[in-house]
Length: 134
Image (cartoon, rainbow, N blue to C red):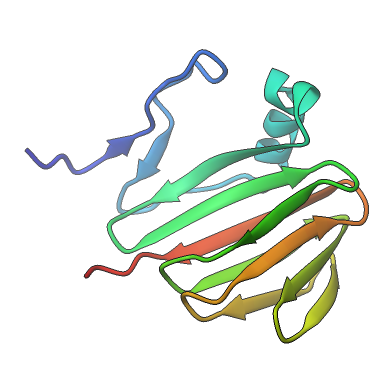
């Protein structure tokens, strides 16, 4: 059964399950999503928090927040990704190179490349993932 609009599953931490994630046009207020991420208990209790703001069969967009010194350990994505800094300062590293990124900077990375992210200050960034279908 395919529905035109996909909705996120509601969770105890984020009960409003009616947020539209996929429609012909989805408007995303990034500043409001940053505030939402900051106001959730997950942000207070752990070193990071994230919210998926768009999801389709081929594309996913996640707004992610990291506390200062929080780190996403080395990992791979099975699709091309981009990371765009909205606030703060990140260290984005692959096995070959490291980039210090601040607001207005972004990187794109091919699939299956090991990378890690460390927040050098409290940071918020947009992670876009193109989904590979094998």
